[in-house]
Image (cartoon, rainbow, N blue to C red; front, side, top):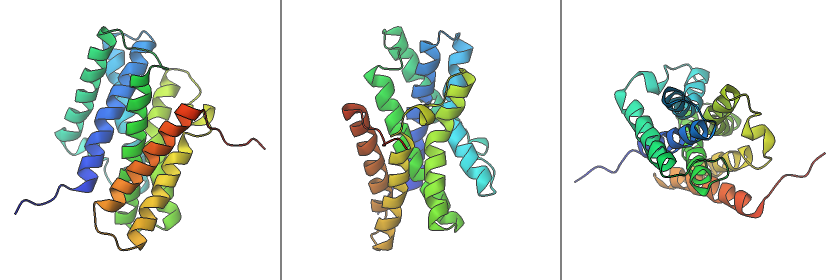
Length: 204
């Protein structure tokens, strides 16, 4: 009997490819040279996960295996192909979709690492949010932009909601991979809806 895929591994691979592509597309939009495009793609792919791992006291996963680097480079390669095809711009649907998928996938990996590390429910939600927004924020800073999490009210909120959803499904004793899938689904649906309908939180 074939063992089911590891939910963390699936979400991690999805996030690495998506954020690798999103970061590289941002680099292309900013007219960086090929090296800069690759660096920005890798930073976006690895930044949130590295922050997550450091917070729970473990070596970043990207330094322990070549698999993570491979997935990130796949994302960068996809972005290069899209850029050469004329798809390069922060408002293009390809960038928005890649960024949303990366946010959702990494929110799930952050929550799973938090559960595995035995942190509190608050810690699980915090790790989900930081993992989701960390890489994109670092790449924005490298481009001397205000991070999108500070410019768009409804960017971190979907990741936070996804972390809560994962905890709720786990509390109901639903077997894997349902908690991970729920986190990814909730985060992705909320982020895409926010983009489609221009959602924002009320100001104080």
